[in-house]
Length: 267
Image (cartoon, rainbow, N blue to C red; front, side, top):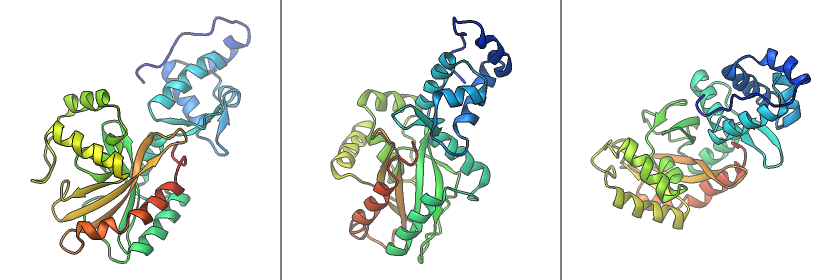
């Protein structure tokens, strides 16, 4: 994992015994990831370091890197648990089996209330990964599935995430990825995207008006981690010719209630 500190602690004694168990830099990172994601999280630094066999100073550096890259999450008071990228990876592997029951329960309530397909997606690197999907009484026949990765700039979930970025970070991301169209409605101009993201920040929700998939119209409200950073969104998907933009706007309050209920759950 790029950027992980590999230097050993300057202290001796107990360090030598533990580091022999931890192995190389990759082994240490994986052992810490496994220990921090174990049942009963959040786990304290000392507990994680001991379980992984890594000296505390080295463990702290590696854990901070894992938090920064989204593999782990910090509760803000020294506790660690699985982050959005680990949850997304689990969802991709299981393809919808065994998703977090709290998230599924919240989505089921929302799906019954508005009668449409609802999802939770989070940013994983340069894309959005769907963690949980619940079909309402009037489900959308779209191509999305749990574990699927979707673009940032053409989806309502992605726009929520992009709206939470600093402008410099947004520019760097667009320089690297470009703004390739998915449909004729996709935003492909950075100036236009910036204006739309400003509206997302002001309104607290984002729309995808057949921008990612023809015939599908979506509304999303940001989901934040324990520190208040946007890491994903709750999304409602509808069939465009059956539900207008105005109809979606009537559900903003319901979707926001669900998003608020998930605050801090993913990190």
